[in-house]
Length: 279
Image (cartoon, rainbow, N blue to C red):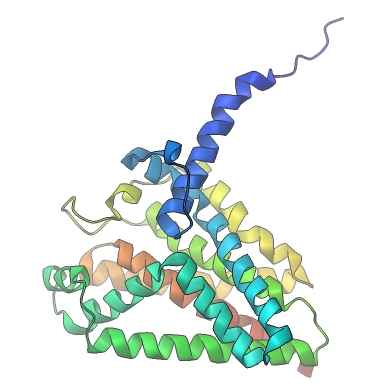
């Protein structure tokens, strides 16, 4: 009788080492967390590492939750929320917020593709970017504050899960553009160019698992899972809008999508929890 053979663990080590390298590459690109020098860098490595983008959301959301939880013991929850937002900005280097500001400036001040792309590439921030950022932060803070109060009134002690869901699913929503749309810039000077190569179906499925897992921590999880509906509508609209004006997406478009998706997630949970409360 032949017994089933099991894979040699040593044969798995190179693959595990490669995946660790990809994860650390994603950590290096999407956050300010230092990584070992042996990780190295290549365009292909950065492209492949994008599957861990939603998983980076776990880390950023986890830090936001820890800062909020720790600060709430010392200050009011209003201050704790602001400190949690500051922590995420510091952790990512305002990477996605910068993209959102550039999109506001580009699409607000441009009137055709080349002009929009030129404005978005400018490192200076304009009136549209300043106004957009102010409104974004105000809406994000107010949404989190309202959500905290709604969950506290409903005796739900899982507010920290909202941070994980918000940061992971918003990053997954942004990443789907790499699978469904074309990169808009034709030059090679953009820092987002290496991640613009199409993802395979397997890679987007793996990323989706990373993005959706925190949803199952929410109770009832089926209610949490329905957040995919407003995110899908948002993705359709932004996809149409970006394609109409610039023919696809850029790295700034991904950052803007992440920021808007995060706010949409918070607003969804406010609405659905208030609806359940009224039933």
